[in-house]
Image (cartoon, rainbow, N blue to C red; front, side, top):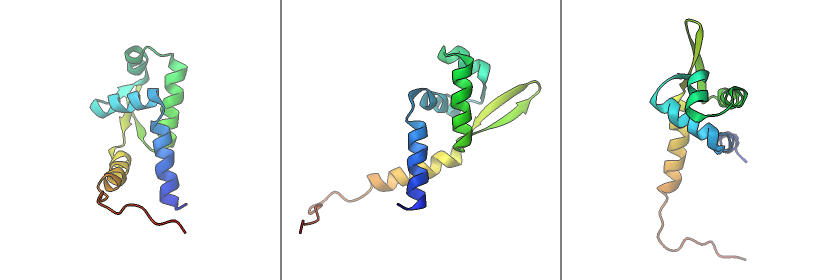
Length: 103
């Protein structure tokens, strides 16, 4: 399997967890700190921190300090690359024939 396919699958797996997906959706709207996500998502702080760590390790978010607080910022370039790949898949022609003959 090509390296790109492995990294794309890893990103999809990371985003496939519902709470992480919701965190990404919220970070697409605004930068947030852990306390915002805990309150908004009604989830325990250790659970939110775990998911943020996974998102950080996957390169989907990064942190920015603001005074005593740490804000999480969505890295849109990671999502753009994945969106491009998904767009290419969706744009493949659908006409006949689409089946390779069996031998």
